[in-house]
Length: 410
Image 1 (tube, rainbow, N blue to C red):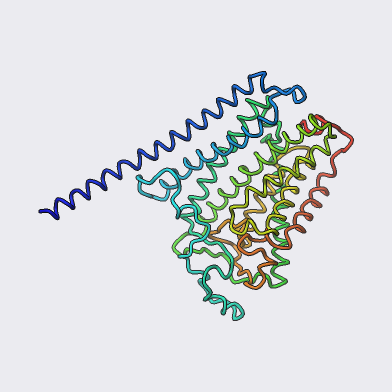
Image 2: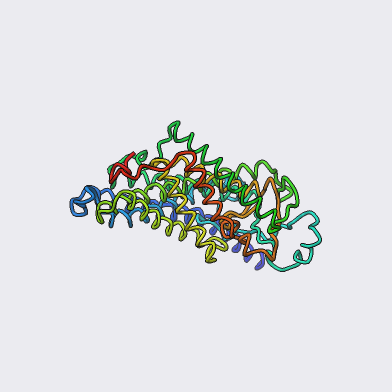
């Protein structure tokens, strides 16, 4: 009888806990909503107040707009990431009593349970296969995990879009399209051109790595969890990388780049070109900081290459007369081809399936970039330069004789 009573008590406690978890998830959602509303409310008040008005900028001071921008981006990204995760859990058939925040296993960069590679390796790589850890530097996860990654990143993309829109209407007194996010035919035409350039320069890097033996080809059309469908895995990776491009380009190469450049003109009386270059340097520093948590992101060469990549992204905007289409297309083409066409990690991002599967040579980490991927290797600066050369050949140089608002206005 005592055992039965103890068992009944245990079951009651479990039932009570299972009822508490959804409530705690709702509580966490409520806290995030309140935080977003408070910060946005403060932004609306600041935008309408003369106390924070800058005479030289003719709007709310950049010294207030900048911290509000970072806080709103952080809060909205976090809120919508959580909403995206809840959607992913439903798609994946997870139990409904999970906490709001991602579990540890839902944010992994590499799933050590995946046996890879599934086929026989060339003789020169056999000795490395038994090494502990990731001897071949690639980050592999299941398609189920990529579904969750994609939904969370989709939420972050929505958060970034809403955050930038809020800053535009409440504090900047401008439209979202004034940042180059026009969504018209020229925008999509430039996005397509940017995508083609992004894929081409990644293919250029891949060819050099392959010819020099830094990576070794093993097979086509590989899915890392053999129980999963190749095309479904690719679909989730496409969704993921589309939203990475939006989540990074619109806030950084859109709002931040424009507002820093305008502040340079207003406060330091810089020419428009010099102000834009200054803003490109600053947004590149932010771009580096965004990638520091990624595997291999703190390696000096990774940080240097990301800084150069941030400058290249700024030039994408400058050389297309302030539009974001080309930059978004380049970013998406770069990421999806590097990760899911040529089988490499992109800024440490894992993959679940790839058209071309390769093995980075364990003794060539300094050349191919290790777990961070080619962005941490020696070839990516040349790829960025090639991309800018192609960009100039397509669109030419901007007119450096224009000044101030003429350069920064669309």
